Image (cartoon, rainbow, N blue to C red; front, side):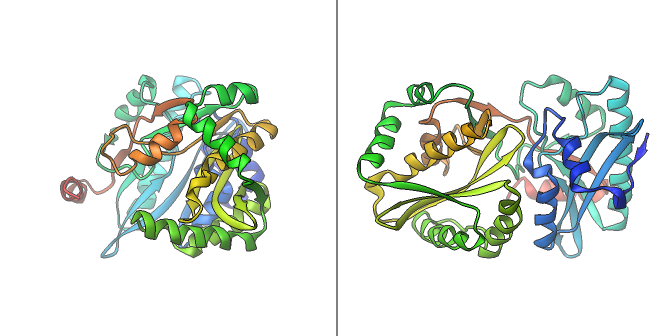
Length: 340
Protein backbone atom coordinates (compact mmCIF):
# COMPACT_ATOMS: atom_id res chain seq x y z
CA UNK A 1 0.00 0.00 0.00
CA UNK A 2 1.35 3.40 -0.98
CA UNK A 3 0.35 6.85 -2.13
CA UNK A 4 -0.34 7.04 -5.84
CA UNK A 5 2.15 9.47 -7.46
CA UNK A 6 0.26 12.79 -7.84
CA UNK A 7 1.96 13.48 -11.18
CA UNK A 8 0.52 10.23 -12.57
CA UNK A 9 -3.08 11.04 -11.62
CA UNK A 10 -5.47 11.98 -14.41
CA UNK A 11 -9.13 12.96 -14.46
CA UNK A 12 -10.07 9.53 -15.79
CA UNK A 13 -8.12 7.66 -13.10
CA UNK A 14 -9.41 9.91 -10.30
CA UNK A 15 -13.09 10.01 -11.23
CA UNK A 16 -13.25 6.36 -12.22
CA UNK A 17 -12.08 5.37 -8.74
CA UNK A 18 -14.37 7.91 -7.07
CA UNK A 19 -17.45 6.70 -8.94
CA UNK A 20 -17.03 3.18 -7.54
CA UNK A 21 -17.61 4.50 -4.03
CA UNK A 22 -21.08 4.60 -2.44
CA UNK A 23 -20.14 7.94 -0.76
CA UNK A 24 -19.07 9.66 -4.00
CA UNK A 25 -19.84 13.37 -4.29
CA UNK A 26 -19.18 15.99 -6.95
CA UNK A 27 -17.29 18.11 -4.37
CA UNK A 28 -14.59 15.42 -4.53
CA UNK A 29 -14.48 15.24 -8.32
CA UNK A 30 -11.49 16.13 -10.48
CA UNK A 31 -13.20 19.15 -12.03
CA UNK A 32 -14.26 20.54 -8.66
CA UNK A 33 -10.57 20.51 -7.80
CA UNK A 34 -9.80 22.37 -11.03
CA UNK A 35 -12.49 24.92 -10.15
CA UNK A 36 -11.09 25.49 -6.65
CA UNK A 37 -7.60 25.86 -8.06
CA UNK A 38 -8.85 28.52 -10.51
CA UNK A 39 -10.35 30.39 -7.54
CA UNK A 40 -6.87 30.54 -6.02
CA UNK A 41 -7.29 27.79 -3.41
CA UNK A 42 -4.30 25.41 -3.41
CA UNK A 43 -5.44 21.79 -3.80
CA UNK A 44 -4.01 18.33 -3.25
CA UNK A 45 -5.32 15.04 -4.57
CA UNK A 46 -4.29 12.17 -2.32
CA UNK A 47 -4.85 8.64 -3.56
CA UNK A 48 -3.90 5.38 -1.87
CA UNK A 49 -2.91 2.52 -4.16
CA UNK A 50 -3.07 -1.19 -3.30
CA UNK A 51 -2.43 -4.03 -5.75
CA UNK A 52 -2.60 -1.61 -8.68
CA UNK A 53 -5.96 -0.11 -7.63
CA UNK A 54 -6.87 3.17 -5.98
CA UNK A 55 -8.66 2.13 -2.78
CA UNK A 56 -8.98 5.49 -1.02
CA UNK A 57 -8.74 9.12 -2.05
CA UNK A 58 -9.26 12.69 -0.89
CA UNK A 59 -9.48 16.05 -2.60
CA UNK A 60 -8.12 18.61 -0.13
CA UNK A 61 -8.25 22.40 -0.29
CA UNK A 62 -6.22 24.92 1.66
CA UNK A 63 -8.33 27.75 3.03
CA UNK A 64 -6.89 30.84 4.69
CA UNK A 65 -7.81 31.79 8.25
CA UNK A 66 -5.86 35.05 8.02
CA UNK A 67 -2.57 36.15 9.61
CA UNK A 68 -0.78 33.48 7.59
CA UNK A 69 -2.65 30.54 9.17
CA UNK A 70 -4.70 27.98 7.25
CA UNK A 71 -6.95 24.97 7.48
CA UNK A 72 -6.98 21.96 5.19
CA UNK A 73 -10.48 21.01 4.13
CA UNK A 74 -11.95 18.04 2.26
CA UNK A 75 -15.54 18.86 1.19
CA UNK A 76 -17.78 15.79 1.43
CA UNK A 77 -14.63 13.66 1.44
CA UNK A 78 -14.09 10.51 3.43
CA UNK A 79 -11.04 8.76 4.82
CA UNK A 80 -13.18 5.59 4.92
CA UNK A 81 -13.97 3.42 1.91
CA UNK A 82 -16.65 0.91 2.91
CA UNK A 83 -15.83 -1.31 -0.06
CA UNK A 84 -12.65 -2.32 1.77
CA UNK A 85 -11.99 -4.85 4.50
CA UNK A 86 -11.69 -3.44 8.02
CA UNK A 87 -7.90 -3.77 7.90
CA UNK A 88 -7.55 -1.99 4.55
CA UNK A 89 -9.90 0.73 5.79
CA UNK A 90 -7.68 1.34 8.81
CA UNK A 91 -4.39 1.16 6.93
CA UNK A 92 -5.46 3.42 4.06
CA UNK A 93 -6.96 5.96 6.48
CA UNK A 94 -3.73 6.07 8.47
CA UNK A 95 -1.72 6.62 5.30
CA UNK A 96 -3.96 9.52 4.28
CA UNK A 97 -3.68 11.09 7.73
CA UNK A 98 0.10 10.76 7.70
CA UNK A 99 0.21 12.71 4.43
CA UNK A 100 -2.25 15.30 5.78
CA UNK A 101 0.01 15.81 8.81
CA UNK A 102 2.98 16.27 6.50
CA UNK A 103 1.10 18.81 4.38
CA UNK A 104 -0.03 20.66 7.49
CA UNK A 105 3.50 20.94 8.79
CA UNK A 106 4.60 22.71 5.62
CA UNK A 107 1.67 25.14 5.32
CA UNK A 108 1.11 26.70 8.82
CA UNK A 109 -2.09 24.71 9.16
CA UNK A 110 -4.03 24.49 12.42
CA UNK A 111 -6.43 21.68 11.53
CA UNK A 112 -7.81 19.34 8.93
CA UNK A 113 -11.60 19.52 8.46
CA UNK A 114 -13.87 17.02 6.74
CA UNK A 115 -17.65 16.68 6.38
CA UNK A 116 -18.21 13.15 5.04
CA UNK A 117 -20.93 12.15 2.63
CA UNK A 118 -22.33 9.81 5.28
CA UNK A 119 -25.60 9.98 7.19
CA UNK A 120 -26.34 10.49 10.86
CA UNK A 121 -27.17 6.86 11.67
CA UNK A 122 -23.90 5.58 10.16
CA UNK A 123 -22.45 4.21 13.41
CA UNK A 124 -19.52 2.58 11.60
CA UNK A 125 -18.35 5.88 10.11
CA UNK A 126 -18.80 7.69 13.43
CA UNK A 127 -16.80 5.02 15.25
CA UNK A 128 -13.97 5.08 12.71
CA UNK A 129 -13.57 8.87 12.79
CA UNK A 130 -13.46 8.78 16.57
CA UNK A 131 -10.91 5.97 16.49
CA UNK A 132 -8.66 8.20 14.40
CA UNK A 133 -9.01 10.99 17.02
CA UNK A 134 -11.22 13.30 14.99
CA UNK A 135 -13.28 15.79 16.99
CA UNK A 136 -16.90 16.49 16.05
CA UNK A 137 -17.62 20.19 15.56
CA UNK A 138 -21.38 20.87 15.59
CA UNK A 139 -20.79 24.62 15.36
CA UNK A 140 -18.91 24.77 12.05
CA UNK A 141 -20.69 23.21 9.07
CA UNK A 142 -19.43 24.49 5.72
CA UNK A 143 -21.80 22.18 3.83
CA UNK A 144 -25.47 21.91 4.86
CA UNK A 145 -26.10 19.44 7.71
CA UNK A 146 -29.48 18.39 6.28
CA UNK A 147 -30.79 18.00 2.76
CA UNK A 148 -33.94 16.90 0.92
CA UNK A 149 -33.67 14.16 -1.69
CA UNK A 150 -36.12 12.90 -4.31
CA UNK A 151 -36.15 9.36 -5.70
CA UNK A 152 -36.29 9.77 -9.49
CA UNK A 153 -36.72 6.05 -10.17
CA UNK A 154 -40.50 6.47 -10.03
CA UNK A 155 -42.66 7.69 -12.91
CA UNK A 156 -43.52 11.31 -13.62
CA UNK A 157 -47.07 10.95 -12.27
CA UNK A 158 -45.73 9.38 -9.08
CA UNK A 159 -43.31 12.30 -8.69
CA UNK A 160 -46.21 14.73 -8.93
CA UNK A 161 -48.39 12.68 -6.59
CA UNK A 162 -45.83 12.76 -3.77
CA UNK A 163 -45.68 16.57 -3.85
CA UNK A 164 -47.75 18.79 -1.61
CA UNK A 165 -50.94 19.94 -3.37
CA UNK A 166 -49.80 23.57 -3.45
CA UNK A 167 -46.55 22.62 -5.20
CA UNK A 168 -48.41 20.60 -7.87
CA UNK A 169 -50.82 23.49 -8.34
CA UNK A 170 -47.97 26.00 -8.78
CA UNK A 171 -46.23 23.83 -11.39
CA UNK A 172 -49.45 23.67 -13.43
CA UNK A 173 -50.14 27.36 -12.88
CA UNK A 174 -46.76 28.30 -14.34
CA UNK A 175 -47.42 26.10 -17.35
CA UNK A 176 -50.90 27.56 -17.91
CA UNK A 177 -49.48 31.08 -17.84
CA UNK A 178 -46.97 30.36 -20.56
CA UNK A 179 -43.78 30.02 -18.53
CA UNK A 180 -41.21 28.03 -20.48
CA UNK A 181 -37.94 26.39 -19.40
CA UNK A 182 -34.73 26.28 -21.44
CA UNK A 183 -31.44 24.50 -20.78
CA UNK A 184 -27.94 25.70 -21.54
CA UNK A 185 -24.27 24.83 -21.19
CA UNK A 186 -23.20 27.98 -23.07
CA UNK A 187 -20.79 29.96 -20.83
CA UNK A 188 -22.31 33.25 -22.05
CA UNK A 189 -25.70 32.33 -20.57
CA UNK A 190 -24.35 32.35 -17.03
CA UNK A 191 -24.73 36.15 -17.15
CA UNK A 192 -28.51 35.69 -16.94
CA UNK A 193 -28.04 33.69 -13.77
CA UNK A 194 -25.62 36.25 -12.30
CA UNK A 195 -28.05 39.11 -12.93
CA UNK A 196 -30.88 37.19 -11.25
CA UNK A 197 -28.59 36.37 -8.33
CA UNK A 198 -27.93 40.07 -7.73
CA UNK A 199 -31.69 40.68 -7.65
CA UNK A 200 -32.28 37.78 -5.28
CA UNK A 201 -29.52 38.90 -2.92
CA UNK A 202 -30.87 42.44 -2.72
CA UNK A 203 -34.42 41.21 -2.13
CA UNK A 204 -33.58 38.53 0.43
CA UNK A 205 -30.69 40.38 2.10
CA UNK A 206 -27.81 37.94 1.72
CA UNK A 207 -24.32 38.08 0.22
CA UNK A 208 -23.99 35.84 -2.86
CA UNK A 209 -20.85 34.35 -4.31
CA UNK A 210 -18.95 36.66 -6.63
CA UNK A 211 -19.75 36.77 -10.33
CA UNK A 212 -16.31 35.25 -10.95
CA UNK A 213 -17.26 32.28 -8.74
CA UNK A 214 -20.30 31.43 -10.88
CA UNK A 215 -18.56 32.16 -14.19
CA UNK A 216 -15.56 30.02 -13.32
CA UNK A 217 -17.64 27.13 -11.98
CA UNK A 218 -19.90 27.04 -15.03
CA UNK A 219 -17.03 27.42 -17.52
CA UNK A 220 -15.31 24.35 -16.04
CA UNK A 221 -18.25 22.05 -15.26
CA UNK A 222 -20.70 22.80 -18.08
CA UNK A 223 -18.50 21.93 -21.10
CA UNK A 224 -17.86 18.53 -19.50
CA UNK A 225 -21.59 17.87 -19.16
CA UNK A 226 -21.34 18.05 -15.39
CA UNK A 227 -23.51 21.14 -14.96
CA UNK A 228 -26.49 22.71 -16.73
CA UNK A 229 -28.22 26.05 -16.43
CA UNK A 230 -32.03 25.97 -16.42
CA UNK A 231 -33.84 29.26 -17.11
CA UNK A 232 -37.58 29.83 -16.71
CA UNK A 233 -38.89 32.69 -18.84
CA UNK A 234 -42.06 34.27 -20.14
CA UNK A 235 -42.08 36.36 -23.30
CA UNK A 236 -38.26 36.09 -23.34
CA UNK A 237 -38.02 37.64 -19.88
CA UNK A 238 -36.04 35.48 -17.41
CA UNK A 239 -38.00 34.83 -14.22
CA UNK A 240 -35.81 32.28 -12.44
CA UNK A 241 -32.72 30.15 -13.02
CA UNK A 242 -30.97 27.21 -11.38
CA UNK A 243 -27.62 25.52 -11.77
CA UNK A 244 -27.86 21.74 -11.55
CA UNK A 245 -24.73 19.59 -11.18
CA UNK A 246 -24.56 15.93 -12.23
CA UNK A 247 -22.25 13.32 -10.76
CA UNK A 248 -22.75 9.58 -10.83
CA UNK A 249 -26.43 8.83 -10.28
CA UNK A 250 -27.20 12.12 -8.50
CA UNK A 251 -28.32 15.54 -9.70
CA UNK A 252 -27.73 18.37 -7.24
CA UNK A 253 -29.58 21.69 -7.20
CA UNK A 254 -26.42 23.73 -6.63
CA UNK A 255 -27.50 27.38 -6.97
CA UNK A 256 -30.75 29.23 -7.66
CA UNK A 257 -32.01 32.77 -8.26
CA UNK A 258 -35.22 34.53 -9.25
CA UNK A 259 -36.54 37.88 -10.44
CA UNK A 260 -38.62 40.15 -8.22
CA UNK A 261 -41.19 40.64 -10.97
CA UNK A 262 -43.58 37.94 -12.15
CA UNK A 263 -43.39 36.05 -8.88
CA UNK A 264 -47.09 35.24 -9.11
CA UNK A 265 -46.24 33.01 -12.11
CA UNK A 266 -44.50 30.47 -9.85
CA UNK A 267 -41.59 29.94 -12.24
CA UNK A 268 -39.25 28.37 -9.61
CA UNK A 269 -41.69 25.48 -9.08
CA UNK A 270 -41.84 24.64 -12.79
CA UNK A 271 -38.06 25.10 -13.03
CA UNK A 272 -37.32 22.50 -10.35
CA UNK A 273 -39.74 20.01 -11.84
CA UNK A 274 -38.16 20.47 -15.28
CA UNK A 275 -34.71 19.87 -13.76
CA UNK A 276 -35.96 16.67 -12.11
CA UNK A 277 -37.46 15.33 -15.34
CA UNK A 278 -34.29 16.18 -17.26
CA UNK A 279 -32.18 14.35 -14.68
CA UNK A 280 -34.56 11.38 -14.78
CA UNK A 281 -34.24 11.25 -18.58
CA UNK A 282 -30.46 11.11 -18.16
CA UNK A 283 -30.84 7.95 -16.07
CA UNK A 284 -30.14 9.74 -12.78
CA UNK A 285 -31.92 8.23 -9.77
CA UNK A 286 -31.58 10.91 -7.05
CA UNK A 287 -32.31 14.64 -7.04
CA UNK A 288 -30.61 16.42 -4.14
CA UNK A 289 -31.93 19.84 -3.09
CA UNK A 290 -28.66 20.43 -1.15
CA UNK A 291 -29.63 22.25 1.98
CA UNK A 292 -32.62 22.52 4.31
CA UNK A 293 -32.99 23.40 7.98
CA UNK A 294 -35.55 21.88 10.38
CA UNK A 295 -35.88 24.97 12.58
CA UNK A 296 -38.96 26.99 11.45
CA UNK A 297 -37.30 30.14 12.83
CA UNK A 298 -34.10 29.65 10.82
CA UNK A 299 -33.32 31.95 7.89
CA UNK A 300 -33.69 28.91 5.62
CA UNK A 301 -37.27 28.24 6.76
CA UNK A 302 -38.84 29.58 3.56
CA UNK A 303 -36.52 27.74 1.17
CA UNK A 304 -36.95 24.59 3.27
CA UNK A 305 -40.74 24.73 2.88
CA UNK A 306 -40.26 25.26 -0.86
CA UNK A 307 -37.96 22.25 -1.24
CA UNK A 308 -39.99 19.95 0.97
CA UNK A 309 -43.09 20.81 -1.05
CA UNK A 310 -41.69 18.50 -3.76
CA UNK A 311 -41.84 15.52 -1.38
CA UNK A 312 -39.04 13.05 -0.96
CA UNK A 313 -36.97 12.42 2.12
CA UNK A 314 -35.13 14.67 4.55
CA UNK A 315 -31.71 13.27 5.43
CA UNK A 316 -29.03 14.39 7.88
CA UNK A 317 -25.27 13.98 7.53
CA UNK A 318 -23.00 12.92 10.37
CA UNK A 319 -21.59 16.44 10.41
CA UNK A 320 -18.19 18.08 10.51
CA UNK A 321 -15.08 16.47 11.98
CA UNK A 322 -11.74 18.10 12.70
CA UNK A 323 -8.28 16.67 13.16
CA UNK A 324 -5.99 19.05 15.11
CA UNK A 325 -2.61 19.53 13.46
CA UNK A 326 -1.35 22.08 16.02
CA UNK A 327 -3.26 21.09 19.20
CA UNK A 328 -2.47 24.23 21.21
CA UNK A 329 -3.65 26.60 18.48
CA UNK A 330 -6.61 24.34 17.71
CA UNK A 331 -7.91 24.78 21.28
CA UNK A 332 -7.77 28.56 20.91
CA UNK A 333 -9.37 28.44 17.45
CA UNK A 334 -12.19 26.16 18.69
CA UNK A 335 -12.91 28.35 21.69
CA UNK A 336 -13.15 31.52 19.58
CA UNK A 337 -15.37 29.90 16.94
CA UNK A 338 -17.96 28.76 19.48
CA UNK A 339 -19.02 32.37 19.80
CA UNK A 340 -19.13 33.24 16.09
